[in-house]
Every structure is written in C-alpha cells, then in structure tokens.
Length: 224
Image (cartoon, rainbow, N blue to C red; front, side, top):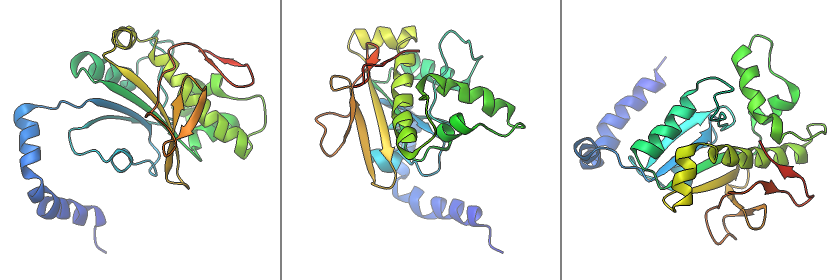
C-alpha cells in the first residue's frame, strides 16, 4: 500500500520547491518578516494560505482548538499561543493580527455539549469559550452566533496583552476578526462600528477592533 504522505513529500521536493527555490533561499538569507499573525482554529477545513492567497513567509501562524486566546494574566496557565503572540508583536513586529473562527466549529459545539471525560486538557481549554456561550440549547443559529461571539471575545483578550494594546494605540498594529463560512466559501469580517460581521464581498475593510467592549444588537455587552 503506497505511503501517501511520503509521496507528497517527494512531490514537494521535486515539483513545488524547484519552482520557488529562490523564495525559500531568500527567506533563509534575509530571515522571516511576516506582516500578519494569523490565529486560527485547528480545523482541517480552515486553510489560511488558501483564504489569504499568502506565499511562504507572509503569515506567522498559530493554530489551536477553537482559535482561543488565553488571558494574559495566566489564569489558565502558560500556553504556546501566548508565547506566539508575544513573539509576533515584540520580535517580528507584525502589523496585523487576524483571529479566524469558522462555521461548524467542533470546539464551540463541545463547549455546549461537553468533552469526553478522558480529555482533561480539552475540558480545561474549552472554558476559554464560556463567556461567548448563550443560555440556550446548541441550535444551528446559536452555534453560528457563538462562533462569532467567540472571535470577538478573543479580540478583547488580545487588548489585555500590554504589547498588543501599546502597538494598537500608536497605530502600529490592527486587529481583525474573521468568521469563515465553509459551505459558502466566504469570510465574514467583524466591523466594530456596526457591531456585526459583514461578508467580505460586501465589506469596505478586512475587519476592525474592537477596542472597546463589544455591544451586540440586543444590548448585551460582551466582556471577558
């Protein structure tokens, strides 16, 4: 039985790499200088390079279950996502941070329905979504709204990172909240002024803020 992964590695080396060899050599010689930190869910259907059309060296990537960001106060313990944010902002001097959730997110569903008892780390991790949950059953509409609320919650947590807030306030860094609807092939970007997610095909920008507590249309304030 053929080893599919081995075949793909060989294809990369013999086909893709020769066509882009100079790009990779430049990235070694000059180092990486990505302008964007992309924090996305680990879901296999979310492919940042396809969504953004980015080339190697353009995205600094962080993937985790749910695209969650731990609070800066370390109340949820140390985590690689925190370290990546600090490195991206302080060392790489990225100009934008994207938090990208998506439709049919297993992490959001599990936050409502629970995780297996054996998944100790997952149970603890899903608590990071608690403030985005609605006091309702996990219907299709509730899940979609929670997925978007979770993205906004992560943006607000980012503003608690002192190096992020400092860079935002002086205009060196912008925050972008995205919700990728897999079945439509469209990203909805968060507009802080409208307090809503807008399809990218209709939006005037790629997402903003929020820099103040987010107030939903029903008047509910979403804070951490």
